[in-house]
Image 1 (cartoon, rainbow over the protein chains, first blue to last red):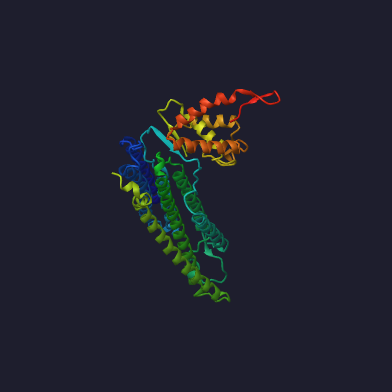
Image 2: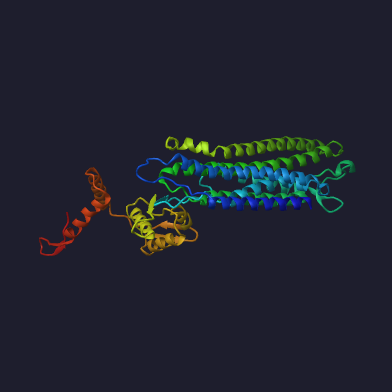
Length: 318
Length: 133
């Protein structure tokens, strides 16, 4: 119930923020971008305001993900009866919430200009990053789902029929109950991975479908904010995915190591080796995941600054 | 890149149709080039989607583009200017710019010359053909 209440509060908060942002963007004086012949470059104030809008959206996504994580984590701790399942879902759900907020927040509205220009190249969700930027997270998600399938297939039900134990014979009852990421954890985690992937795609689509800055002199600037925002979204999504991939690997390692310590069968050594390897890989994945989330936050805060570098002549125009 | 003047006397859909048509005929947009979606172009140009859709429909009727659900909107082959025309246009535009003419003035020069060149002239064998430069 506490988890549901926390989710309801977060959903309401997201709704309020989205509605407020939408209201502010409608009320705020529209952006004026100089297009007359007297100016050879776009005005700094116009660029600043346009880029501030892009930066705020990215910062809101990262900030909301962190706030949701903290709120859900506190609520999930209270669920001792669900054997850590809510905890396992927290990072994926919180980043999905942040990315959904990113997709829902309206873009900065620009005032009607006498002229508007448009590129004749289609913008796609994958247009603003290198191919590897998209292949690596997709591959990680596929490997993670495969990992969950393997742990699911090697799991056994506990007394209540929940597939959360390592399927081995002659395991002493003292360690047999150590949680292992079987189907009980695997199915919800696969569902969260799909939700996270969907949120990332939605956010990338939002970046590509946002109307371009109307002035052809702002083309490089327009591309730059899209590239940085794409990087923020991908790092946030990949960071969350690696975070709970690592967590799952650590949980599997814990079950394997604790069973290997007291097991008397011939495969004891390899189970211990597998457990230690899994623990090491899990720790690395959690570390890399956390680092990616930090980098996403850093990128989100630097959109304005980096676009100034991309369009230095604009910064000189008052 | 195309530009639409919202306060100009020419309707926006006509401006889009004209500019895209010119880009296709001049070969700037090659055969098979995928054009942006109606939604993207309308958003970038600050126009209603119906305005861009109308321009696309007219270009499709003229056989310059083709639209399919899977391949999107693509430029059709075989509508580029002849190489001789393209070369002459390039030379003419260069000369006009060198002499400080505006686009309208340059087009005016073509408009003036056009009917003169279209008057048929007698060939040596007595048949009539359009006069060439």
